[in-house]
Image 1 (spheres, rainbow, N blue to C red):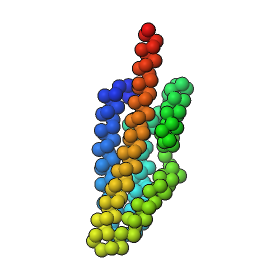
Image 2 (cartoon, rainbow, N blue to C red):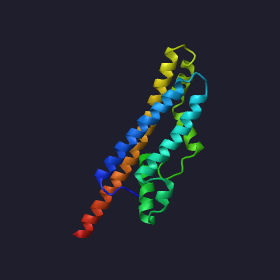
Image 3 (cartoon, helix red, strand yellow):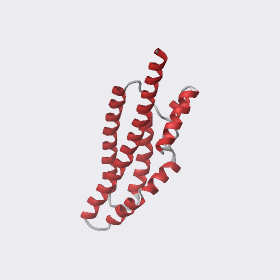
Length: 164
């Protein structure tokens, strides 16, 4: 269900930011494991689950959007498209996660290479992993927040117009 007020929206954003920090920490821990490739597998699973959970909390999962009336569903899709976000209102699967990981490919390559530098490399790899996960999660939170805020504001202006 979509939030109805900005206060609810702010609370959801804060919950999601905490979630992103926790998942980013897990990603960093996985990156510190000196087995090449394991962190990429963990990151892909974390990103997929994280983005789906953020969508769910904002009321923007595919299932939630599909349950909306046709007018609201269309508005949500138009707003998501205007933000350039292909993850809102859709099932986030392997293909979408892979496209996100490709966008972060340079960071990932640096992370994999740094593992071969003793001690310092593990720290660098963990830091890059944490930052990448945090960036992806917070960007998605910001997009979801903007979309729902626009929706709430539009609904409020329609209610004010109808009351006149």
